[in-house]
Length: 405
Image (cartoon, rainbow, N blue to C red; front, top):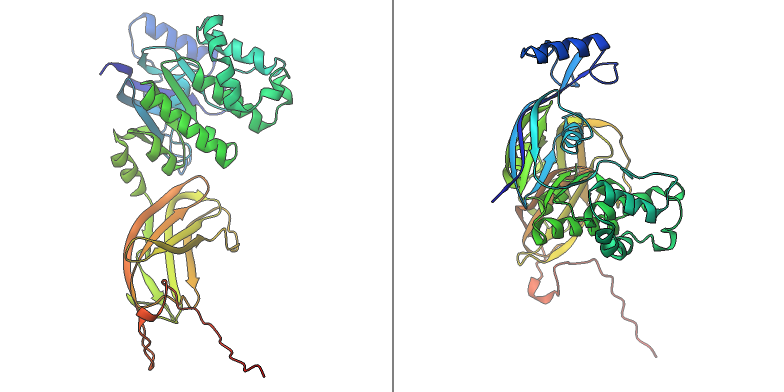
């Protein structure tokens, strides 16, 4: 398979508090060193890109010595915590900024969507922006016209296509921007967090289109997202960045597994009854408690726990998540616990499986299907055969029989 992207010894340095790499004198020193064939005099200066540590230098390496190769047709997920260098890497690959050292070689035309409405002129209409973006990509007017109706239909902005985009809502803006980037015939599509904007239907539509682009059309896709489920469903390769350094480059399952190990999840595979005594066999009319203790590498907003209980044949019986049950919302925490108490569960005798998800709107920190089996038994004095019940639940039904005279 032909290479689409080769990144060699790529580094990007910024000077804190400055726009660009620094003062004119620094730029002149760099230029003078380069024409003499000398090393960049500031190449060894600078702290690692670690936001948890206080800066000890005026310089910081947003990226440091990045190397990888991407084959044509690969869909590559780029993951890492906030500040890891993901967006900086995409800006360099999109050629909107230059690396400090190293090189990037790319084969083919590039369409990028780094933020809402990248490359759009607010005073121009949607129609005019479609043609302008296509021209920037090097496409002829005929090529753009051939794709025009498909772009507009996907975006859902047909009624406003001749309205200046400055009057669009943020949702309309990103719909049209994504439609243009995905449908114009570039060999490489670069997308940064487009799924964070728009409703669930549009997010699903975006994933479907990117999947078509990568697997159906053989184009290369680079996708940055904090949604691990979306990354897993779309991508076959992964890049994990940590503090500006390439931590892992491999198939997507290995990369996601490495990333998930950075998160400590305790007690997630345990079930309890009162008073939080861990057990594996439950009485049929008692409470069932699921507890997740978490310790995350960074603070997150609104941690959420979801679960599904299935019968022995894999049929889902019930489930839900904390948001649905309107629990007390906690903001900006990285350590704590979420407890779900299923009151008087009423399951009949038998063996069941538990599936757990833990995360928030942006992150899937833990997602395990059928991670634990547990048993329900009737310990009461009066044992009623389960064969007399239909389904998996034994609800508390009150019967009344009246004689009518």
